[in-house]
Length: 93
Image (cartoon, rainbow, N blue to C red; front, side):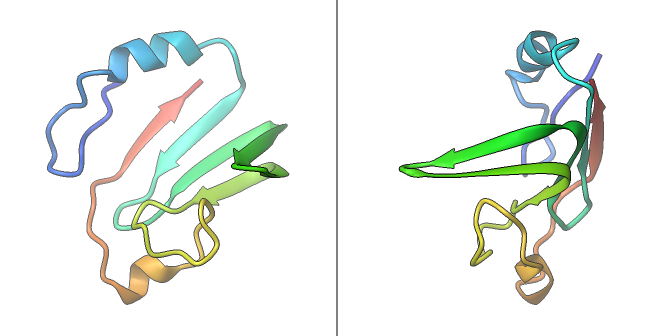
């Protein structure tokens, strides 16, 4: 069983449902870096859509979790400057 944690360290109520929906759909690993971004590692192409803009990426993709990146949804390292603090974790698909 995988359990996602909220920023305050409590288990997310929807983590099991989300994991079961996604499991088996992709060959992907999600690494939640302590005090840093969420890293998606996959051999598939990932499409990110925000409003009318879209971008396709493959391989490892770092997603902002601190909210301070100027390249959202991607990480630009701003978490280091703002001393972002959050727990780490991993999810394998």
